[in-house]
Image (cartoon, rainbow, N blue to C red; front, top):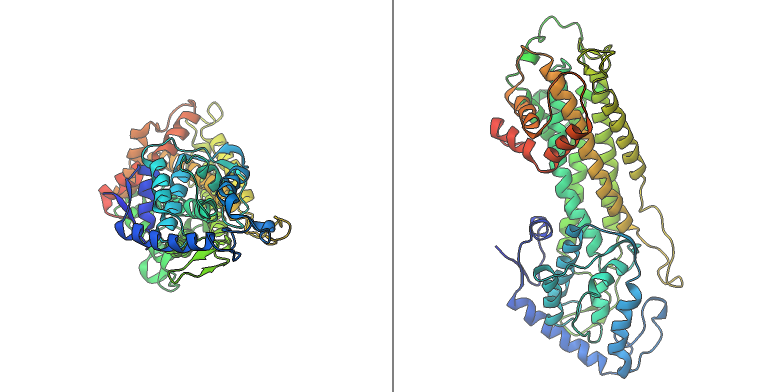
Length: 485
């Protein structure tokens, strides 16, 4: 089904459908009428001698410079040419598609004063291509994502009229697109984190008692409740867990096992906050100046990326924390002093074989990088445009590093899945729970082998990471035990 752009907002699911699955997008008749009405106000302003920012004046630090009427069309084209000044590798196509969609959505609200033809020209980039390349560096998240959106606008062949150059670039669409995609990715990874934690609890002969509904209800954070419910369901029916339910001298497990719902749950609650931020932004109309239905043209500060930068930075922090806990569970499997009877490094013949020793090194390196990426970008600011933009959000940078951190988290969780699956297999003949067993079997089907003599590890880790990314592990688990929260 096509996504229809009108004066109102979009949902996160619609953005993901367009960005990642190529859903069609159309402009509604209501949007065309709304845009035409506000466009008439812009054209009246353009014909007037009265100063109006971005219509008859320069931009940024040149806001007090008057632009003669015969130069205003050229000014808009010059704006795009001068602002398309990014550098670096291109960002991935999904982010570009999200940017194009979200900018067209803002145009469709009518507040930019752009013509309907301009919104349709943007949508043509999604349907007909070619998709523009957008460099990774250039935005400070100040007047939105000026440089990245200028690179998008430079791909349009439609001549620009008064204010339309500004309408194409003065928005937070890059930051918002990255946040929306990150929210979707982290929601999937937090389900995987619960699966991996349950497998580790099982393989390390941990107890399931700490995840009891009555116990986690004593601290009623919603994310904690959801994570604990997932882990309980995943461990239900485990012969391995049942084998030591009585007679075990240990009264409690290490934090990386026992506190998984608390850490994963806190991440879920942070995600809920960030999803709410994204939802509000998707219902917003971002430009400067804005053209109101009554004909007023007003300068505003809604383009500032602080809400988005803060949300992205928060998610980068919780990504690092979830990854760090996962790595601790990996390490526990490989230490014969803490693994409850498993061979050192889960090796087939310790000494001759090194098992998964270096897989833990890789996890540790990825976690270290996640910690570096968790340093907030939004606490920084570098004034620009002759001090007109004297406080910037760095929201684009927050989104860029979050995208990288999420890839690393998926890799760390993949290493834990590989490790825990081997640990569970080494508990044979005791059987895994249906949920954890389904995850292990999905790994095996993806090309990850079971215990045995040393063999190249990297291809199996890559296969596990691919199975995390494509969702096949969660699908297999849910087919076995039902939906995960």
